[in-house]
Image (cartoon, rainbow, N blue to C red; front, side, top):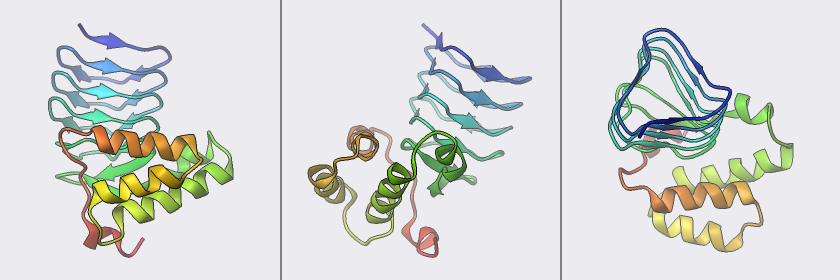
Length: 161
C-alpha cells in the first residue's frame, strides 16, 4: 500500500509507484518518478525530472538534485546529484533551517570520517557510533549500516569538499 505523510508538495507529473512510503513535509518537483517500494523520510526534497529506482531509501532532510538518476540509498541529511547520483556533501541549506549549529558540526565531522577517509565504510560507522553522543549522527550511522542497495559515494569526487 502506498502511504503519503502530511504537509507534502507533489508538483506536476510526479509519479509514485506501488508500495511507496513518503514521510512528512517532502517536496517532489515536476516529473519526479518514484518506482515501487521507494521510501522517503521526512523533509526530503527531490528535484525535477529525477527517476528513483525501486527499493531505494532516502533519509530525513536529504536532497536529490534535479535531473539526477538515483539507484542507491541516500543517507539522512545528505545531498546527492548526477546521473548516476552520488553524494556531494551534506544538505547544509536544509540543515541550517532546522537544527542548531552544534548538531550540524557533528554531522559535518561524521560525514568527513565516513565518506572522505580511505577506510571501509562499515568500520567507520561502527567507530563513529561508539563514540558519538549526537542522535543525528547515530541516525546517519544506523541508516548506512541498514542500507541494502548501498550508498552512492565516490571518494575522489568528495576529497575537495
